[in-house]
Amino acid sequence: MHWKTIRLELARTPEFPRGSASRAHLLRLPVNDQGVIDEEALRAAPGRATVRRFWPNEPDMAGHVVRTVEGWAFSYSIGEKDELILHLESGPMRQGEQVTLIEPGGRRLPFRIASVEPNVRAASLG
Image (cartoon, rainbow, N blue to C red):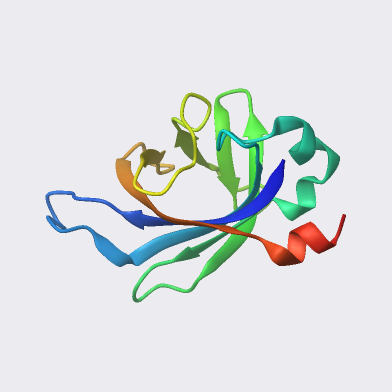
């Protein structure tokens, strides 16, 4: 298992036919050699599994990646409705793959995995 920094960028949508690198999420997650989230490692250190949301003309948002009964989610604030993450259980977190995020209002947005890099800081923590 290795902690990774994973960048998700908005993929093609009707509003953004070429996608948008400026609409992104930066994740720090433990993944195994197959690129799948390591749930055991995440349970052992849940505070390390983080997300930052970068969106033009909006303040950055920071939170955690959490496991819910509905699947993986981004939790930005206690009491706020989480943004669900789909397709992480069934597919590896590899550059070029896509994941779908569901916003609290139900809108589905496709994101491309733009990069997957070793997270040196998390690895040095043990």
